Image 1: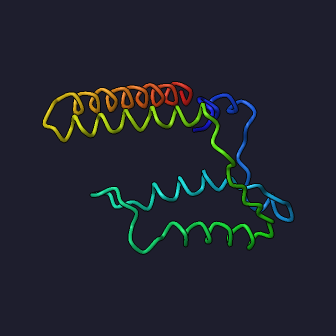
Image 2: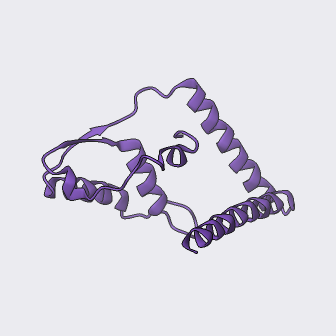
Length: 138
């Protein structure tokens, strides 16, 4: 679920690190985030199903091996019981997705319209960001 706008909040003080700078240190890994990232990347684009050869498990292990290669000691942390507020938010998101899917499959325009509106919002936001970057470069 995450914290909304966290990266924007941290942008002024955050900076990227090379993996080598973490050598000989212990690093906590949020297993839920890794598994979510990997499972989203390992889905069939046509059906949305996880690919049959289970690449998400292999990729998780490859990430861990990369940390070990750089002499970083990973501590994998799994979430405990999901807080009620997170459970409600996830259910709300699931309901929205299901409604869009039903509308889209039923031949109605509501789902398509909602997806178009969302796509337009994303496009407008990306164009604004691009213009801001262009202005900073000048």
